[in-house]
Length: 285
Image (cartoon, rainbow, N blue to C red):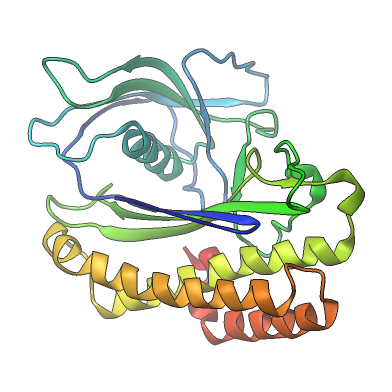
């Protein structure tokens, strides 16, 4: 399920993936230390070139195929599975070498890909996950400016049931706040530190409500497909409503970032909110 919210100066995509029964075939050449949730993993599409340097490491070759009883095998879901597999083996790059579209024999997207640990992923990076070190900079707002808005923040909270390395039917919920480079923009003459701080508060709000989701999913003990299907959507919807209210208040009380005294109040509130749920920080996962 995908929920999309569009309001002045922000697009939030809440990606809410269901369970799947995809088959994953792996031929691992080398396993590195697993990457934390805050480390970005890039997808390099089938038609994109990749340059491998002497310091880059090939992890292995993988395939994701239809498991037979699969009911969530969209391309986004399949790419998420590839990222999960890469993260487990310490890779930060997924190079897709074959992508099979749904057809008469399968309704699923199926991919073959190589996982690498690249020394530098900046040339392929289009997003990053919230962390204390991942602060917004105007250089990351790569979208084409529009005349009606000074700046535009684009991000999403990825909520996914992760079945990797768990017994059949078991798993855990991964919740990731992500900033997207290519659909975020700033008008050139509007670049200033206050408007950047305003957008950073939005990013911090994503993390705060991600923490609330992690807390609530933990309380509900969502560790199986059955519990995910029964309870996840209600938890998600309730917290999403709270987020919408906070976002509306931020926009109106700061006049979309133009009222700095209002922004100062929100910066303080945001910092205090994050402290209250420190144990559920993205940096702990």
